[in-house]
Image (tube, rainbow, N blue to C red; front, side, top):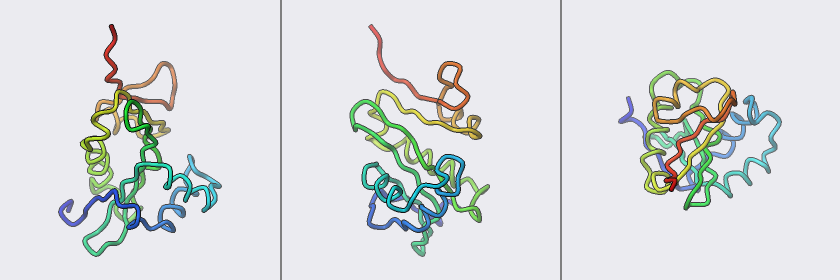
Length: 140
């Protein structure tokens, strides 16, 4: 199944309508305008997941300074493709990216996917119900 898809960081391939329609209906992006969606894409390191026929079926973005910190946002898989391991493949791909691997801290917020992200080394931050992170910072 995963061989039928590919992931690209080329923003020119992104289907803005697909991304916006999904995110603006989500609990974390409810009410986001198309202009806001475009601005978030412009200012983020983006990962699009596509079928071999170039249909966009997934998306995620990382807000990052490209040196120390990255924040996972808008991780989505089209409903008809959910439950097939594609979300896991997307997260694994992002975490394997050289830029992301070099960051000292990678964080995210989630209301309902803690178990998924724990499998990839994310840990709960403090007593927050939403915040999780991978912290690679070396302390003296």
